[in-house]
Length: 397
Image (tube, rainbow, N blue to C red; front, side):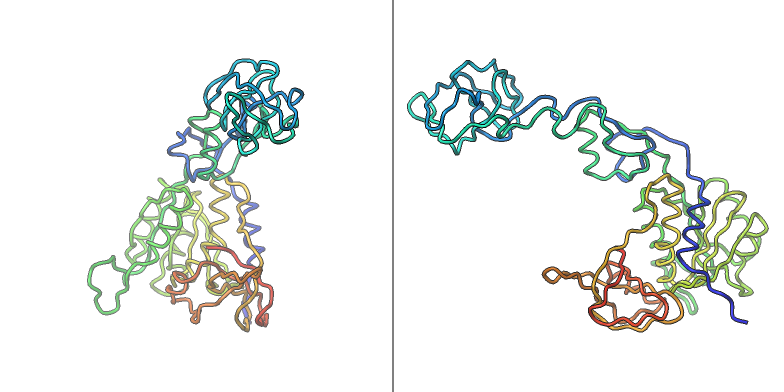
């Protein structure tokens, strides 16, 4: 009897519903906070801007005193960073972008709409209250929440935090993710390959993926193909890591010892997912530490990490909106899907107002060059016939 394949979306939903996010927090300086996940909402203690300021180089005026084509004395000069004197009635003040609007002024006439005539300035336009003025709190008001708990801090967020006076923020402690590789055939580059050996490429891909998520990599090494060695490494990982990721070793082969070792130390659910590439996937725990057994084929590993493991790790890290974000593009290829949902490696191109998805020619689970070439994964449902121009969901890598 055929084994029933589990739906991908259901597995992701089950994982996210059961995750127990980390609670430990630390304070990080802004210089070290990029890519980390906020543990608290961040509110502003100031207005931004703190006072009304000029949006233009020009002249601060009281609009009630100004008539078009009138000539006025210049009573003050206010560069950015300076505070001018109260505006004298019937005069104007030279002002520069970002400078605080002086008392009694309510508008700025940009210099392109003026003309110097001797010691005076002629205003060649109508003055309206608030024109070219950035009001106090236009960007941020006191007490406003500027960033929410669970947000992954981006470079632009660092600028926002600094603009309201923060020098550090409270973040969730970065997860420690243990990476273990299984298989006596694996060898580290640049050692020369012997017959039957392959380079341990999965480790470096996984290490890059985990590091790019703001988490710390713990290298558990290549595990010798024995039950004893496998148990020892899993114990070590459970003691020092928040989650363990293994590549290979969870099938039913006689030399695959990870499945039995995990079951001895905890629990393991081995799933056969309706996904291509990457049908076999394992999840469980080792002495209470979450464990993922990813496929050994490099593309299968990469795809199942992004689609299944990554959302779980983001949720475990305390991140909000952990699920992958999909966009809609237009197929620039034809394809017939099989009995599983397929994630094809594609490049995204724009043609005027169209977003075109172009497929890599070879889509095998061992073709790692397809992942390096691609910048997105496109989702094709089981049995779907894709024709050029069909709308498809895609996720950027």
